Length: 320
Image (spheres, rainbow, N blue to C red):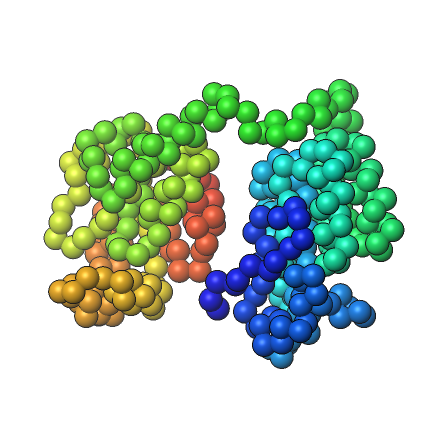
């Protein structure tokens, strides 16, 4: 499915509002009302020929909205027959901003999730959603209540507290800089500074996995495995980092490489790059190399970047 185009919204303009391909407004512009696709009066969900329903998911945050997006997507992923159209409203910190958001929601009813620390603003959301007959959930409040009861102290209720530019923040920036400098085998001389080294043949998601881990604060280097090309000697001598190999099925790698070839310049030998028998040999070579050096191996065929990163981090205590 191609990338959905944006649904137009009344002010304030939310971030990340998406309309999926197949939405009825694409073929019937008359279904657009005030910039929104008109909803079924009975179900408040889109009915489309493909048998999939779409619903509005409104995410109101006084910070970046990342917490809400993660929670909303985790919940929506459990319902395969429905797809959420995300409306993300970040940095909502006063009554005027909030009332404009609630007016927009009234024009496209749906589920409302929010992370608003200010109790007065949170009360406005609750009351307005009750008047509109819409479900709304404070994602953070139940967690804050548990913390308060357990710790015996009230929360500070400080907006965006998790985004302070503190030591943890600068550690992540340092990790990102290190990881970008050590992408695809670049600067193979200071692996001892790395927390993790990722090896793998081409198109096993080494770089995106490395960047994801760097954003978690880990210094990561990644190196391509190429038949008959020896790995850097500094890597073989490194004691500190966890060294892990990534592989995938022939089908997965062949498919990704075929898409990659489409963007290559003239003269690139795409037929060798996508040849399934050669890919099979590359995978076999990677397995042998990792087995020989006792490096753990992770099959990423059916794993997302996040799942691959989690599998790598789960290995770290075992290699200490």
